[in-house]
Image 1 (cartoon, rainbow, N blue to C red):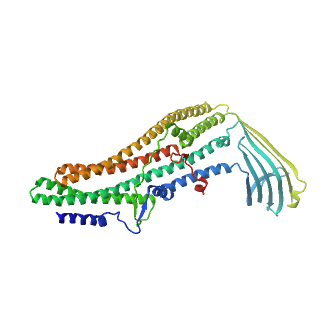
Image 2: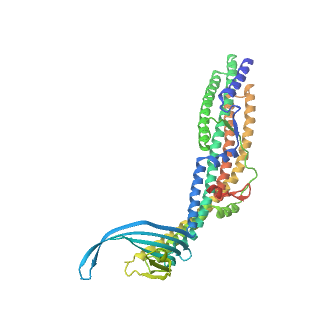
Image 3: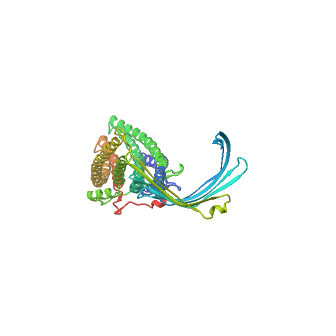
Length: 496
């Protein structure tokens, strides 16, 4: 008996030193759940993708705002050569073709500004043009426009700038919320991978302990069988349990390596890095109020900004359909100074006034119902968008309610799982001691051992569900219920 116990003790030592991949080493690090979440937010591929998606939205918004700033442009032609034959009529009434060779140089500086409220545009420009006629001998002529002021204004036309001023800010706010939701989804993925590996760690520990226990029990049973105290069936049952325990250790090691690879790949960690995950605490004494969660979700969630954006876009299309293909007019006017001369300096002396005023009207006379059809389609689409959004809002509120109920329930489930784990371990210890003194059969011991294993894994599962449910609730509300504040980041830092 003493030899069997010594052998079992030696086996446990060997297993803890060589079989388990979680053995302590000098370069092995210990990661908490918080460490894994931080790494996931900083360097995972999903985090990089989320940042680039937000940057694209940021620069789209910056581009929208930039178009309303004054734009300074320089247009030049250096040079433009034209060679052609033109028909002219001589003083004798004959038509002849005359070769015309002209070199044209021009430069114009313009300052343009869009007026978003009206959809028009004002501008100031200055230009100089030189024309060289080289058909026979070079003759140069200069045309100057020292300053010209003008504007262009559509009348009773669809104004895209007015609608962009409403839609683009909402779209940018939606993009910011969408980034925060992407971060929370990264947290959820990290939690799943964390607890997959943590469960694999525990499975190895359980399998290793079970193997050592069954090795000890099998050796004790051999001695009892030789003394005729137990039947062969019980000995065979323990041998089978011992063999199954060895297989469980190998399967647990393989499962651990697979989950370790998944977590390293997700966090972009080096292959040679060795680390151990530490069991996190549960979320204690946190009950979320449904109305609080619903209010924060309506304020913060990207879906709410998406609903508003969809309604604005639909209304914009209705407005476009009503104004296009109807009465359209455009007013264009400019006033400036101009002069021409054979010398460049003379082209700026005593400039003359130049004015341009035009008013164009477009009125469709017969369109066979084209405009009316477009209006009806746009209005129908707007009603469809409104109906869809109403349904989505109802589903949105139901999802928030169910998620809050699920999270609050997980708190109690975690406490029950922790209690079950403690009770099962005590029961297994008592059952094992009673088996060793021959008070119960091996079947009862196997049941106790199985219940102990399930209780330990059940606690990890309950812990996973609790944390995952919490971060799913954070994603749906964009609110940190532990810190009691909305989620936020430095968006300008991300955009750089």
